[in-house]
Length: 102
Image (cartoon, rainbow, N blue to C red; front, side, top):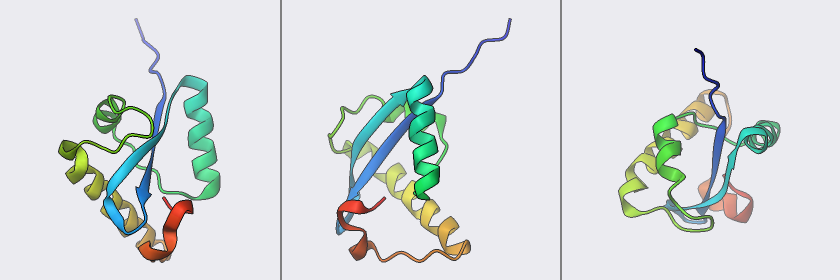
């Protein structure tokens, strides 16, 4: 018996000038998750796929800052995303991301 997996998406926002402090701004499942992913791809915002991280991030309330125990993995995810984008020729100045940033 094959079970269908449920698509999930979590969106984080990083505070200007404080890359470690991030806030959960969206948590979606199924069709809404597909829309979040589609919108993110269209806007060329970074996406990182990690089922275990999504499981932990779903425990964080919307608009709440990540708990300290998730800081390290969030920082690693951000660093990974910037490394990939740098290889792709995208350049970011974290001071310029402001309210419209990642």
